[in-house]
Length: 508
Image 1 (tube, rainbow, N blue to C red):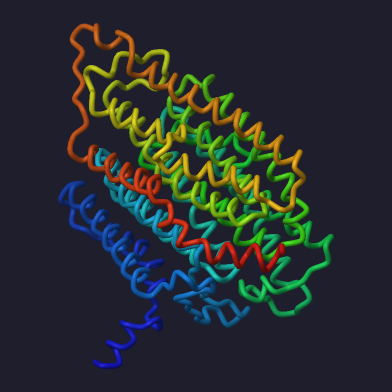
Image 2: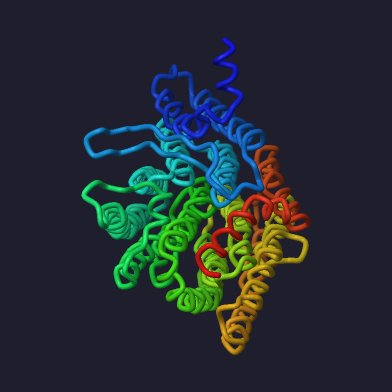
């Protein structure tokens, strides 16, 4: 008993394995639950998500050292003897934030999916399978395991869109799988190339790969392959066209997972593999990343007002905000990379919240086109208030997380030692134009939805306002948005030491 207690209360306990496999194992048991209605399935799924989030928080709070930039809570088990494949897990300052974000958003998305009644068992199993894939990816220390967890996302998302989506769900789900599965080929080729380079035995360990040196030409080829894979998922233009269609048709609980977590996997991969494993190629591509990120901010912010579909408009705003992350990664500065990670967390909350509120609005009026809406502020004041507040967060209102993240990315460009002054001025100027365009599409969306007299004067019109469940979800997302906006040091404390080590080791 003493030995069991010591294992449980030390780093030797397999916390990450339990956290990674609990959702999918728990999800598999859904099919064996008694047939007593959907409520049992919902409560069971919510219970699994809450237990998972509490376990993750407990393990990180007691066993993760914030001032240690090295991998922690490491696990290393031989999985398949035939080709020397290991189950390697570990976390550092880059992965702890996305893992906590995943747990938080998935729990709220499960609560948001309460109205789902058709094939409820399959729906909730797919959500929990996604949960395991996301945790596994953010905690992987092995390239092949990283690829397997990356692929584990595809089928659940495809089914969630194609079965529970809108009228064009088959078109959107097919487009999603073609883009993401096609990009996975480049990821697999990159993984095999790095794993088999200069060795007859596959070397897939992150630590070994990070210390491996490659000829510059080969490093650039690897970099381009990984960049294409991560650019589709992030998304980076011109690989973004699957995103508006997918968001436009998916159920809003699925949209919360897509905007809150799935897009962040691409940005995480860019830092974890492209930046850490291939530093010389990243140095070459960094200016181009900043240019593409700047174009992305302007392009998506300009395209958003032209979207009639509410969720497509929010999807283009997501593409625009991801541009700040790309610029932060390309800035080659401590401040820029920290700003990019803060934007990953910030946009995870804000994007999920906006899609949730768009979905709750659709539940009431059954309209998706903004030019058919209007006058909703009077009949549904709670939805109007929460939508307005979180739209302000999206347009980077001071005091909210989006403002701090974008400001730090701006400072990251200005303080970067790797760009000429004229480059910094041009990129900052164009980014500033993007921040001016953001309020245009955000405020026009609010005006079209909530102001005017279209529904207020409609005969026999009655809309019920947000209930306790919906208010709880909105407030739960709003609190971290305002908390990070007022005290961003909490997020910076997670990543700052790892970011400093990454920049100093590879670029200074």
